Image 1 (tube, rainbow over the protein chains, first blue to last red):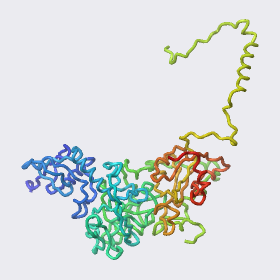
Image 2: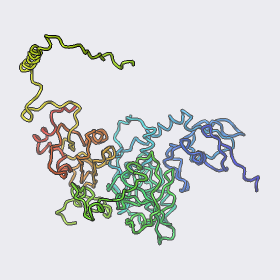
Image 3: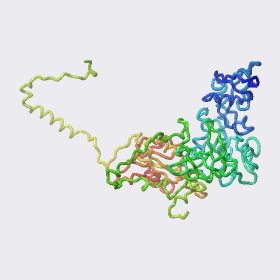
Image 4: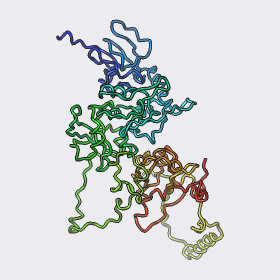
Length: 366
Length: 180
């Protein structure tokens, strides 16, 4: 069997790597890692048939293979092009690729509302990252951005169609994870949108995963909506014994203080979900007692999510009580008595919906 | 040793002359300087009756801005809090209900917004970070207070008066700084 294991030699940005036949250029580049890996907005390793739509992963093939070393005439989508033996690929070393990618980003942002200050995805948004790297400061688009009629996707998922870049990831997720898909892409061209027929709410056990696969803020968690910004939360790996046969209960909890604000699936370094989690784990288990904590999630230190996380801090031992003979020190000010923010009687994380003005007014009964 | 500046002078240790030992001329010289200052322009002002103009880059107490229609601009995006080096800002966001469109500009707004003025160092980074023109550092000092509690400023203290219903207070709160 040794002769069957022939590996293809492929050179990406002057780095040579041997991969198995049938590997896509994107996967080969991800094996090298770092800046060599092209960004991907629509391709998702765990979803069959995804990719080839967003064109952000375009690369230049300088030599097709050892047998036919002619370059490919056009830039190719690396997620859908398989490697050949002796292929030479240029990604960040090619000016053509960088130029094309900048154009693609501008194209993706044409109809994007850029409402990052409101959007719950901000801070973990792939389009945000991409446009910081490749985007232009201004826009050349002079027309009105497209808007859509609002669709209600049920109590758990919020759809913001204006932010959608039509990557089809959520459609593939619903198709491959759940038995019955009730949402999809309607209409064509500029009018195409993710929607459900006749406002049907999504009620599959795994439908919550479309929130995690969405690279932008088009699909967000309604139970977490507007409650906090992701960079103020601390991600913690945890697991629980889930009764659902297909769910292994491995998730990331997002804490603020002692409150679990949201639960997401664990993501790898490419922002892709490691294990799908069921709706019960995601939306209904928001107490620490439901979970077994494994430890803090490793966050890239360049990510905004790592801000304000003080690693390796040790709480000093309180000696005041011993010195004062057991008496409590008289504080000049205890911030929790004064502050109106994060009051214990207003527990936002326990709300099933976004907070409203009625939740904060003390005289009104909730 | 090489001197650092050219201003160093060696101390003279000569004994004083007769003229110098009399002291009276030196006193007269000193008094003339003193009396001449009486006729010069006074550099002080009678605060608080009179106030000095603020420098154009002065950074004082924060205000939360409203738009022309009197709606709150802040959307609780948290960029001021993340930019704040002193971690003085905290907030809680909420969703705008139908019927509250005249109160809040966007569908998300800050239900609670707090600045701890004891922590604040008035660096102005929150103003720079704000994408919505919502927070500004005004030409006011944080007034003195007897308790620390008084330095936790909530939305009631920070919000600028409504330009539609209270135009005079709004103009006063805007201060003398000309808006470009």
